Length: 296
Image 1 (tube, rainbow, N blue to C red):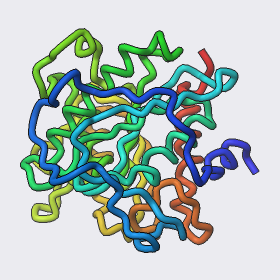
Image 2 (image 1 turned 90 degrees about the vertical axis):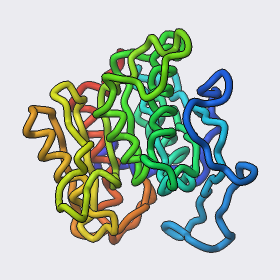
Image 3 (image 1 turned 30 degrees about the vertical axis):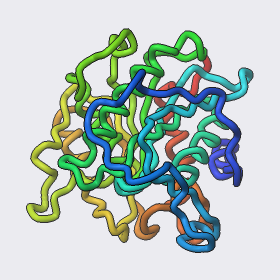
Image 4 (image 1 turned 120 degrees about the horizontal axis):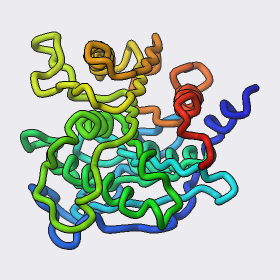
């Protein structure tokens, strides 16, 4: 079996500790927040399992942070991915779609910066605005620390799931203008990701019109895109398919993996009966073909 495939499936049950945890903002974040208590895991023991395992559903996040995971120096290739967990903009699937993803990325030599963006924001309009501020700031922060962490500032990507996939799309398409007023030197670094991977992304497709939302526009200078979706996902796969078609129309490279079954919210947890859960191998191959896994 291909070594990269084995690495993609060998996700540890428990993530390593981050090398650094950084607050995104020097003070109160711009934009709205709607927490109603202390930050905590809202999962109930034994309920809502994924691949037979519990997960952390982190709620009431009011202090956006980056949890930075660096690969071993002998594997590091200079690429970094900002990881955006999903959770409907109500919670963050912190390990399932965050720290476990960091472990996988580190295993293929890629640094990971797991984004703890503010939640809940689902009742706001648009629900992703505060998280988008956090995401733009996160990309600039990573790029500003590239020298310190041994990164190539031209190889900073973003990958997210479900609502985090929506955030990934917004970061990939709407980088020409910040969603907040720049506050310091960090914001002098570009917030444009160099590649983006929305995994079962949400909130781009309008089921009332059967089209992309009017505000989802792919610019000609958008980064290369990698999509994963299952046909039977409750989040309509046209979120990915129509975005890929829009990218094609303006000449932006895209790769799409659409599986017949798989549902939603599997993260990187391997299920033998669901080929969709082998997507990390396909993503690693895509990254390799584009040179993002080549050591600098």
